[in-house]
Image (cartoon, rainbow, N blue to C red):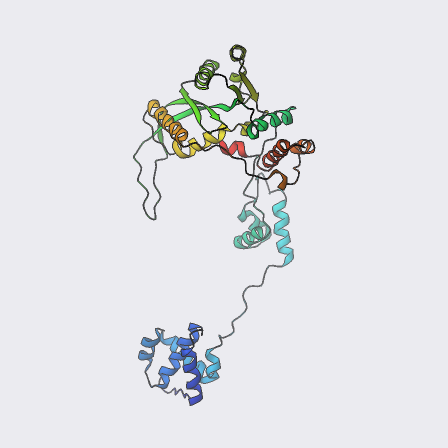
Amino acid sequence: MRAGIVVTVTRTDRRRLEAIVADRSAPQKHVWRAHIILATAEGCGTAEIMRRSGKSKPVVWRWQARFMAEGVDGLTRDKTRKPGKQPLPATVVQRVVDLTLGPPPGDATHWTGRMLAKAAGVSLRSVQRILEAHRLAPHRVRTFKLSTDPKFAAKLKDIVGLYVDPPAHAVVLSVDEKSQIQALDRTQPGLPMKPGRAGTMTHDYKRHGTTTLFAALNILDGTVIGRNMQRHRHQEFVRFLNTIEAQVPVGKVIHAVVDNYATHKHPRVRRWLARHPRWTFHFTPTSASWLNAVEGFFAKLTRQRLKRGVFQSVVDLQLAINRFVAETNADPKPFVWTADPNASSPPSSVGSKCWSQSTSTNESKLSFFILIRNNALEWESVIE
């Protein structure tokens, strides 16, 4: 202890200090403070007390002085401090909210945190807390696309009906093409992932050409019929239809869900359909390619095989796609409807008209599908 300072510990104080040390539920800050005073009572010097308690010299002196002034009670009570910053007035908070909900200044398209902080005269962190508390995110925007097809409801009911209740002795195929798949080769080899570091890949690349994948997803068993071609004209589409025709067993009626790409409606395609009466095309509504189930397979292909793939030629790319299709067919996972159509409230906007017409179980499922679509209009952009 400092020269000239005497710390007197009475028998009662010692019992209380020892009780604090022995109490296994006592806060640790109370315990090491009691240790400092007990060591002082034993006549230990400041250096020894610092060694025992692991505290610095000013800390030892501070709690010795506190004990002399307030006794044991002073060790169990922290010194009062000045209050922190006052919370922002409600008028300032409301001003930030009103600014956020209004138009941004000048030619800016949206508010940023720093723009709001400057306009409201508060800190950026205060703006961030206000936006978080009011669930406002001016930096984010959700895109949507509404179909203007006058026959939207009828087409939707037709296609979803095929999905949830396919006809007997029939095959339901979701058919589309993923065009312009690029064979990208990186300019430098990447490095593998390590603990604390992500894998690396060069931003620039070499482009070795493109291919187009024609795919038909079997709704019932989840298998995929795929074929790579250099272009995606009606000639290639007819060849792909012949491929499907050869693989689907004779005697099975084929219902194909396709989008409104001009190739699918070409006169030669129509003549091909006329020569193959077991085929029926079901066109998705305009601006509603999300309704085509094969888009989910394309998204999976992009995510798991193409996005990080390195291909030195178009042939390498086509071989990789073919292997992915083969792996998918080796362990297919068809979509199984598990949602309860009766557990949802009627949707608004486009789906509301169809909801009021739903009576049977399948139509109820259709209405639930419309509800999902109504709440996730960005599916198409996410898949692409």
